[in-house]
Structure formats: structure tokens, C-alpha cells
Amino acid sequence: AQTVTQSQPEMSVQEAETVTLSCTYDTSENNYYLFWYKQPPSRQMILVIRQEAYKQQNATENRFSVNFQKAAKSFSLKISDSQLGDTAMYFCAHAGGTSYGKLTFGQGTILTVHP
Amino acid sequence: SAVISQKPSRDICQRGTSLTIQCQVDSQVTMMFWYRQQPGQSLTLIATANQGSEATYESGFVIDKFPISRPNLTFSTLTVSNMSPEDSSIYLCSVNREFYYNEQFFGPGTRLTVL
Image (tube, rainbow over all chains, first blue to last red; front, top):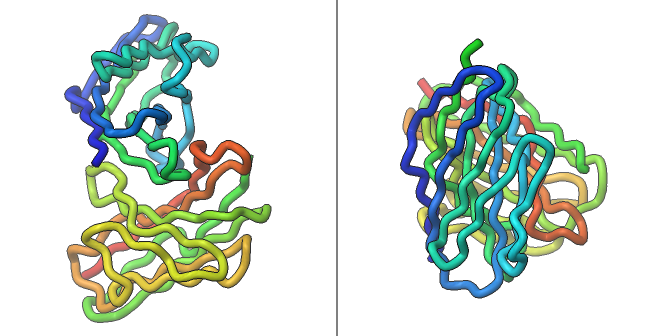
């Protein structure tokens, strides 16, 4: 079974600064995918970034990047130049290579960006 | 990306009654998923719904409590039966991005309150 752990229930950051959200996971699969999802107060789940486990290069999407440490089973999210609109709940999630979309989510981290 | 709508967006129901939640996608998709998000909690997969076959339920979820229909490739329903206050949650449907089976899009969710 897969597990995903987010050890930071809440984080805060000043606007324009950088923040890193932590995530660790455990999996029995050799091929898998990791995701960060954002859920603002509107509750719409939005995919932030995606990482394939077989790729060594860390994924980057504009201000969002990950630090994927496969051996340590760590998958942190770095948000640069934080904006007020980044305020949301952030979920780390895992999908096994053969699970075809079945996601296992972490507990979530509430991020607040202060002006 | 897929556009997903859910009805109703929210509802308040009495204990012992049932509610059917609808999920409509703007394109044909093979797999649809139903998740539950209890207050302040993470998302938990209820079941996977494939067109033309019985839904596959995750551990802790049963068909009698959460019957699912999948009559075609763009539509699914989830019924929450014989509700109790513990069923108060946000229910979300999601679909896989075609040809990227481990990337999911989520509907806006249905907020259910059971009194």
C-alpha cells in the first residue's frame, strides 16, 4: 500500500518570498507518479506540478518546482515569488504506475501568503 | 484539459435520506473516480467507475452505501444512501487526462451536510 505524509499542517510566507512544502511517501511500485495539488477556498482541486519517478530531472512549472529525492522518498514543493493567490491547501499525492489514476493523498498543508 | 461539472454544488439533508450526486464531463473518458473529503481532511478514494462494468470500491466503502452508476462515457452518479451526520463531506469526481493516465482533473465538488 502507498502512503503519503505531509508533516507541516500549516505554513506561512510573506508575499514575494520563497516557501518549501515537505512531502514523504512510501510505495511498493517501481514506476509511479507524484503530484502537488492546490485547493483554494473555492475547493476546486488544481494540479500544480507532476513528476514521473523514472525521470531524474526535477519538474518545474513557472514559479513552482520540486525537489524529488527518490532514494529518500521525498518530494518537496518550492514556491518562488509567493503571491497572495497562492494561499490554499496544498496536497501531495501519489499514483502507482499501474493504478491508472487512483491517487493517494497526503494530509495537506495550509499555506497562507501574507501581504 | 477536461471540464467537469457536478450537481448539486451543495445540499443539506436529513438523517436517513439519500442524495444522488451527478458528474458530467465535456469529453468522453474511460475512467471516472469518486473521492470523499471529510471536514478539514484529505481526499480519500471511494471507487473507480468504468462505463459498462460495476464500480470498483476501495477498502471501507461498499456498494450498498455508495451505489454508483456509469451509463456512458461522459456521465456518472454517486448516491450517498441512508445518510448520517458522519457522511457530511465534500464529494468530488475526477477523470483521467486521456493518454496521461496518471494526471487527473477534478470537478468542483459537492458539499453535503447531514443533520
